[in-house]
Length: 427
Image 1: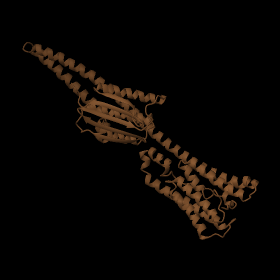
Image 2 (image 1 turned 90 degrees about the horizontal axis):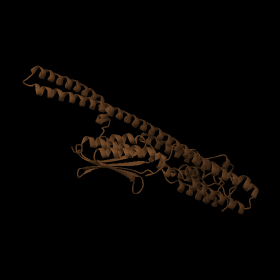
Image 3 (image 1 turned 90 degrees about the vertical axis):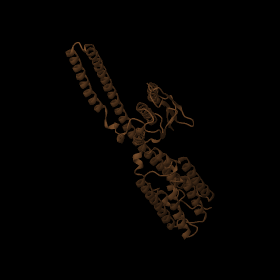
Image 4 (image 1 turned 60 degrees about the vertical axis):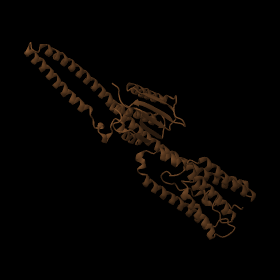
């Protein structure tokens, strides 16, 4: 196979730079898995821009190779229709580069070998493969791109040596040009991939930070509600004690001192009226819009809204709820909700998970809630310290309700939290 000298266009052309990230290849799949729900809403627009970028890259490749073929440098035969068909083929194969980047690169390199075997005009060795090399590197196939690019340059150098090309020319110009073009195409692809992933990571961290801030605000609100509820408890307890004292006085004074009976009953009436007013105002204060089903109920019915808010932070949450609305007490439902909420927070902040499955079912008077993620599982890293605090909080909450919580590494990887709570509270 005769390999003509490198075309001057080898040093003057490079791969066209595509637009947004691909929809195929391992890198494309990873991008889709880690993309937040808000980003998925723009998928049709992104897909259209990716197709336009692929068409543009293919068109540029066809044009550059066709112009080089027309120049007719170092050819054993005049350009023919077949040579231009090769040019079209080099571009057309790029249309599937996102789904099969390595296959596209192999087909391109084999096409270059076939092209030169037929004695067509020189188009350079690395020039037709530059876009395919770039695509493989961009879609996380860097090792394959460097290996196949090295084979292409090595085969071209071997045939040039067998043809008697001076070593000084080969090393100082042709080999250096091919190596530079291969490395530049691969480096550009890696650079685009790294920047794209960096942007995705930054967006995910931003959304996770917002979700964490919302959760902390909700926790502060809940703590304030607990303090208000405790104050209300103390106030009601005091009022009940006052009522009991005056009721006993009235009971003892019946038939003996009607004025004392009337005074005691008046004290009872005044105490109950004051406490009822305080109770109503406090309940209105504690009943915020978040208790509205439209905004997410703290209970099993609110798991769908909780999953939706977690998805916005980049975590794919699937909920399987097999429990009737009134099958469990409100306190049990609220406890289950808080356990799931803490488990999702741990998966988002500590586990590095991409997907979480939540399953709740009722059997034999017990509510089983299972939360499983596909993250790193049980670790002893410092980052897992916060998760440990959350797990202890889940166990304490379940114990107060008469249930249990177990957690640990799941079979097949990831982390699993299993809460078992009674459906009804016993007196």
